Amino acid sequence: MKKPPSWRTRAERLAAALPRSRLHPAVVAWADSRPARETWAVAFSGGADSLCLLLLLWAHWPRRRRRLCVLHFNHRLRGAASRADASFCRQVCRGLGVAFVAGAWESAPAAASEAGARAARFAFFERAMRARRTRVLWLGHQQDDIAETMLMRLARGSGAAGLAAPRPLQAGAGGRRHVRPLLALEKSAVTAALRDAGIAWREDATNTGGDYFRNRIRRAVLPAWRRAARRDAMAGAAHSRELLEEDDDALEAWVDALQALNVRSELSLSRLAGRPRAVLRRALHRWLQAQPRAGTLSRFGFEALLAAVAAGRPARQSLGTEGFAVIRGRWLRFEYFPTLH
Image (cartoon, rainbow, N blue to C red):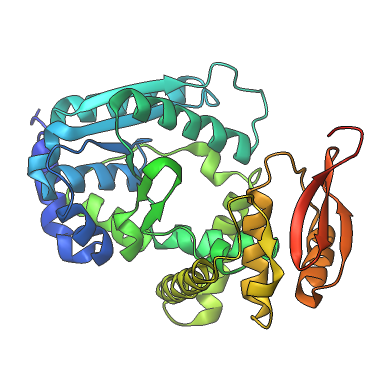
């Protein structure tokens, strides 16, 4: 029986089919500019997207191979199949000669939600990245993920910031960054390149079910949308995402320039006067994020407070169990309940 090619050989084959020019240009430029000793963490489930990502990183950035740290999280939701995923990922990393760190969901519920599984996975990533002293996490999202995310967020009424996800370069707290080079590729291009290179991957059977919203979008909505569009709908969604990111960045820069939030976390209505409602909305979001004791504000409550900010009128609105949002004298402040402060 003929011995299969090594994982290093398979990585080189894949890189020939998907050269650096096929990856997102902003990511390639960013990666080439990074310090030589920076460690890169790579999320690796064993599926087509994350396998493609890992092999391309190994092949296209050879000087980084010793600085790659591959992270695999076992959700423990599929029994033996989950254990086989972990074994496969370990074998790939051994074949490439890269560091491999595995984690598992020790308290996995019998019926895990999509949000719960994601939270557990990213909590593991954070712990592993702290241990490895890295702030860079590479993720295998591609263009189909853009369309799925956009449709999901449209259903819940997201604005430009939410619809601009997932970003090729996403900055986070503490200097952390998520990096997604495959956003320039459709899912079909990823799987075709893997097949042409003779590379098999792991399939998650839960992706074919209908329990999760994303799976329902993937199975029922995207195929119909593609047929109805009669054009490259995935590329169109990717282009819209790029435009929304530009708009979102412009609005954020505008809010930065106004400097309406002072060091006491008070919002100046004078600095916001006459500005577009989109700018006021973002400034109010920042003010809320700067209030450590404020509770969650409903969409209705937020819109009511935004209307008061836009009008510059006095207002007093409950913000959770500890205080109020108060507009007085052209300032928006958080004031504690009298009995608590």
